[in-house]
Image (cartoon, rainbow, N blue to C red):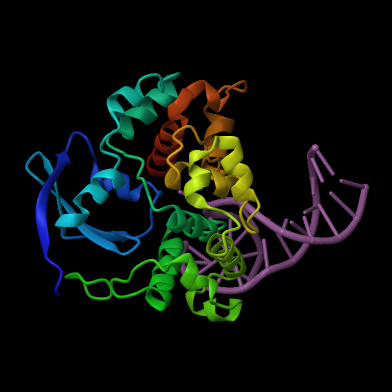
Length: 273
DNA sequence: AAACAGGCCTAAA
DNA sequence: TTTAGGCCTGTT
């Protein structure tokens, strides 16, 4: 290991619950061992843990600002939560979800990951993403053996569908490649799309074969950090059907509707609706 | 063992 | 414009 990793104070434990943030289904490359979460974003590795009332991070010093941004530490979540408790159920969701932060993930990594997520459960998504990194990424210089970077779109664009059988993603392999090629060949510029309005960014994403409305909304929320994006999967659909009034419109939740969606998802999955 | 899992595509009405 | 059927794979 030639890179130098150092420990830093990242934020207060009251500003981020690392378990909820990593386990609420928005990311797929973080794991916990002995109370320490370790994982990666693209080609960067980090470890997070609690020390008294502080969230600590171990990372390469030059990457600290990258992680500060990744964990969205410049957003005031106390303020964002205001206005989400529009009924008793949402009040519960906001309460149990306290500490979740919406990560500012790499746009391409989010796109590829949520393409893979379709019609899959989280453990399998994580397995497929891991195999994708192991087979097409580069080894990351860190203390954990077998950590690989998320492959770039350019790297994957060189692949044929058959090359991807090793990741066991089934019919999604074709979709991953179509996304990789769209990005690598410039059919879509993720950085530029992220700056557009939600409707325009959505239209850009829907041009990719294998990206529908749900996946596009996940990319908007978790990759483009459009906090008003509201992905509706089977869990959220269940919540909307059973817990929310018939005339509910997610736009009523305002510009942080996406955060509310994540609170709902976490609550529904962990407390059985 | 049949159904289902954080959908999407295509064909047909 | 909406709806049905199929799809890779792994798990229960």
